[in-house]
Image (tube, rainbow, N blue to C red):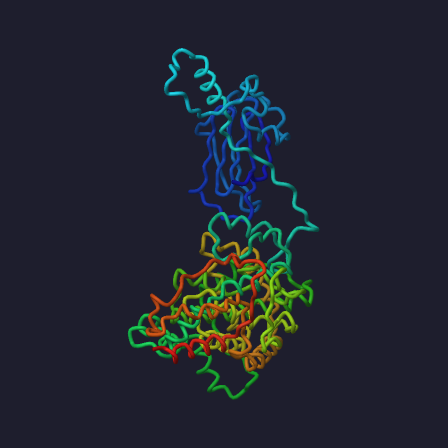
Length: 535
């Protein structure tokens, strides 16, 4: 439980407590307020506040609780039992937060502390020593069961970790973790700087890549029987074209001007969304670096959105928001830097340099666009249900088509993603720290020339990506062929038996164990060799 910040004022009739709950979604159903004598208790997960005053309050029809939108706080109004009575020391927060025995003096401290639960000698007649039982009873009754509360320290504005749009936010994602944020991959998002977030993302992707899972998906698509293909649906997924892409391709066939942008009409719902659900700010003072990173963030979002459309054959499911968030490094890891300042190699890890070491991002500096594309491929081969290189490549082609359609088509996709997050009780925090500003900025200042240039760069970089250039750093176990032996070569498409369970994102590799870079092409080659050598 977190102790929220609060302010207290009073008049002749009431005590007014302002409780600040910034960065969480207010729900009237989740608020609990209890007034009992001189104690006021407030609870709204993950916040808990207990205040003990020097005079008594009363809970009657005059008591009220309301949310103040502009200040992001809840105002609790509690009636005084005695009209006109002055409550002292309302600015001494530590005194108000103290547990009952902290300021009253522990009566039990006059006696030696002993165990609250004690095993008694069954052979001994305790009735002969009633004082011992009495002492234990008194200690139990005097024990302080109240939660200890600590005021939150003031934010370190200069040195605290910042993230989100223009690096302007903090204390948002950390709170959402206690509410079940499964998109977040950072261990401590509120105390991790930009480079640490980038390095942690790269390390975790290496740990999360399951070569056995990928090989099984590959073998299913290539050698699986009808039952295998029916279960995986990879054949239907690879042949599906989302309506937004089909509309673009149909328009492009009839448009002779290669510089033209696709005409888009926004629905009434989308117009209302832009008017009511997006901030109306000025972004004219953004630096050129922030502007560049914002375009790259949009690029990754377009890929993640395209991947979800393909995987679910155009239908949004309850998992769509997780897929879009998980595949977007700027959301899951708050990583807009993408290119680490230092090689993402752990200490005490023996690196076996493979013949393709030139593809290693630790030895070759990538451009921000290359890193964006690499991150999309790597994450889509680690986390979704369908981990197929050709599917990831197709999603990137669709992201390129959306960019080629121009600003209005990109806006349409951004609004769809924004709406996904807006309705979720936990993941809405990513709108608050990133998507609200990103959508509003792009609608206001997105440039058609920059979008066209980005599309051309993406097309050029995608032509350089292959199964030999996408790689992962995995533990090298000479006795296990890097996990490929998990595949049942007699039944290459039997998903239920050959796919190992999805592993945790927490890096669990032992320190000092040898690792090796393995490309997607090498994983497929090993799987093919084992399949050819089957009895």
